[in-house]
Amino acid sequence: MTTIKTEYKPELNKRLSIYALRGLALLLIASGTVFSIYSIVQNVTIPVFGVATSGAVFGALVVYLGIRNFLSVGKLKTEVYKPNAQFSFDNFKKRKVKKVK
Image 1 (cartoon, one colour):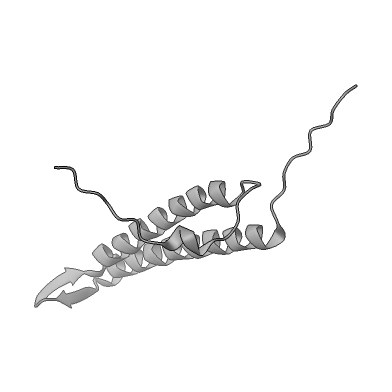
Image 2 (image 1 turned 45 degrees about the vertical axis):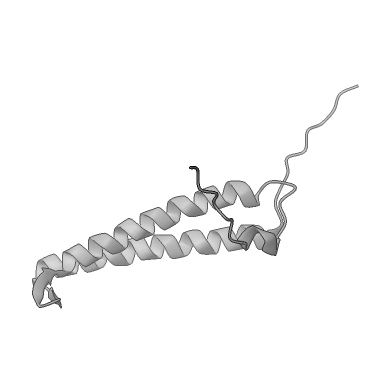
């Protein structure tokens, strides 16, 4: 007797949510890149605490946050795509950390 393995396919709403989050992360990366390039070409400076800071620095920061977000969505995808994954408010409770003396 042969058994056929069926691949688990997550629900459509889970897949769409992950696609939307990935799309937003890519949009964040793209906007940071465009702003960095624009800031370099147009010599944009932004005053921060009285010091003129290049706009490319802020663009690079947005790119960094976008990459971090994109990687976090990848980790989230592995958790959400598990067959037994389900939403629970218990996942959002703050855990108390015990101090070691």
